[in-house]
Length: 141
Image (cartoon, rainbow, N blue to C red; front, side):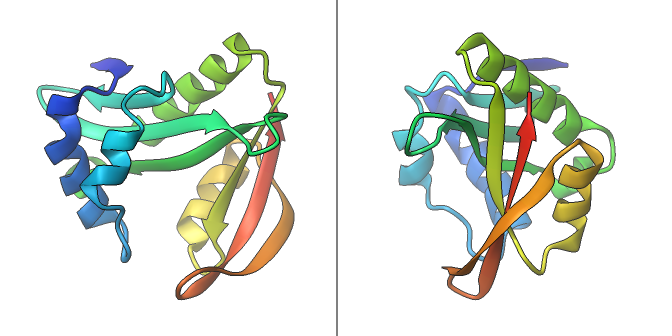
């Protein structure tokens, strides 16, 4: 098991994970745009099994978990939790003391995952997604 920065050669596997994880997946060019981001991580175990992207919020006051996903064949094995822990550690190294994220209001599994990992609801953004609202969650780190 290795967690490391994403490389351009990882993009096709990351897109595969994205496509099996989300109804409205990000296109490959968005992942390519994040390659210079030190918070673009992959979990590799023979092949890429998951990824996470953390950066700073627009106001640069908080770390922002932009996306996290695990391949459908590898879920419920603790991979997302390990990726999230690495993102939190990376955010601390960069001087952040809080992390925030948006999650689909209807995605109860993801909301439960974040709650189980210490995130609390901080607000709601109506119409954030094409087909859903977003719940804003945060955590002191």
